[in-house]
Length: 392
Image (tube, rainbow, N blue to C red; front, side, top):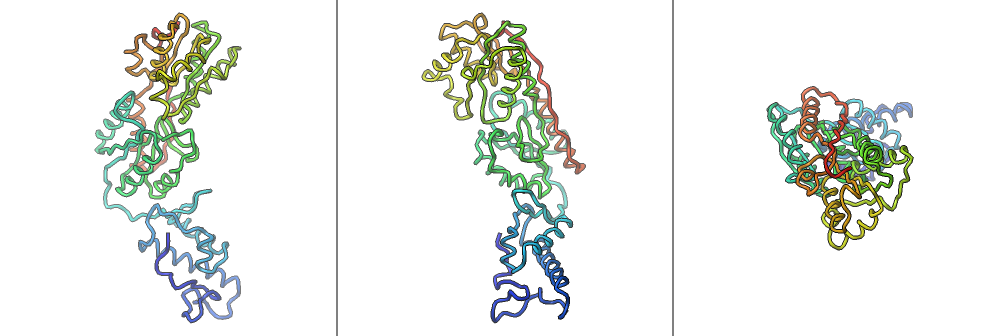
């Protein structure tokens, strides 16, 4: 951000442009020691920046000009600039984020809360999402808050647009399902701005490991382990395959548990029988063009663990069309215990996602952070195994 009121150049002794009147930074006694002069410089810079922040030149969440730029702008050493910033950080006006920069954290006290909560999800109209949102809404409404809902469709540009909107509209807090949580996220600075403005965020289903996050998630690694162990111990499977989502942490965690259990049970982990897909691939994964290739890769498997019930449904349909019976030849596991697992031609063995309870817990944590100003602990929720007809 360009700081207004300093277009005339540096205001420090020895750096004033020719013909300019010496500025405020020269107001120290003549003949003072060099170290006193340096001390005066960082104090005066701190005073100037403080005045600019409190006067509205910067707003809460703004990223401050870098140390190098401030050094060049005011003709000071980086050490002097760093001392000035440290003073303002101690006063609570600035927040320094390692590897990101320095942000203005001061915000004028609000006369009253907005009682508005932003909720960002990847999807809303299908699968498990309506039930999760219902849990969030019920808890917020019961406590006198209303929600504003935004949908990213798991795209980072949509997430950025929503975050900027909620920053501008000053919600009291945010409940967020992270976007492509297994990939580096370009919107982390927006989340840091929220932190600088004192707007708490609770993540659900997935979160960004680069941020010190509060989250409510399912125990995906344990469930991946339990699925593979069930197929081996209870269904008698020895050659397991899997289909997992690569762009979110849930897929990685479910695969981690799945692969660890296979090795623990003394079976071979065949990398060719593990298929990865992204959000963009979902609609065409089992298309007439792609399904035969998936069946070929999994045809020797006697058990397959799928990322969720939707993928399990698509696999069962493709296997049956290829003349492979489920579960007699191939047992199939899904995740989430969604309605898909019931209306599938062969009801899908799965894990019960806590859905509504997860939404309630996310909302409760956020409300406590808003009302009490404390930081909540993350919550990892177990999923119950639900055995149906798709496994032997």
